[in-house]
Image 1 (cartoon, rainbow, N blue to C red):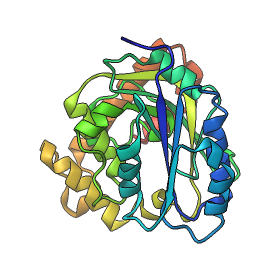
Image 2: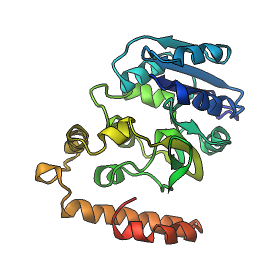
Image 3: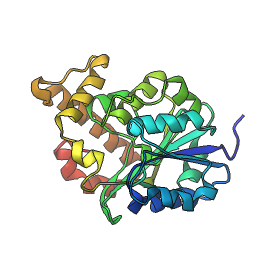
Image 4: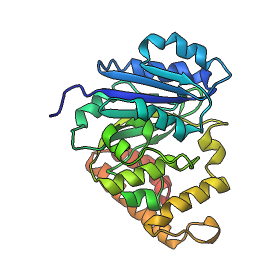
Length: 278
């Protein structure tokens, strides 16, 4: 039976990002969600992160500060103690936008495994770099395009995450894409909420900015595609197959947004579309 207020557990993996951590925690608490379980897994920070965590201790249901095996390991540690029907995962330098939990919970049903919204890319000072709007999720989108949803604006059914074994701890940059693929192989019960619900910071020093074009990142993305029969060109270059499938995704996204009445976004993205980028 669906409840109006499903319990939401939010896991915050943290490591030496004290200058952003308050903003992240405030964005969770200011959702005003009555059935909230806040979990902070700190990797043994040497900055002021632990002092900040202690400031919020009365609002935190579980926290640790100890060396761990990285982001995926921290998230799996949080998942092991979470009790909510829904799991949120917010990195300690990213944040939710106002009303995110209410919008996501309103779209969720007990038979839905993932509910997700749109995303803002912002800089260190929270100035918008890019406005990302998604469309209904398919595995092909990840296989041939890349990240077509984001944890910063999503909630996941806890039981499903547990059943599929959580995140792969051997991956550094493709762990979220690989998780989304496994979720999609299990279920087609994804619901998109056409509203910006989270913000993802891009600035020097983040995993994304440092590793997006690195050899390791490219190889991880190549490796997670291979079990699905998707091979990349030699030297990890995109071939014609990828370009055509990217175009197919972008056209489907354009149709979806047009039907949603979002003509201005399509006009602003016309140059991007011509370059086959999201």
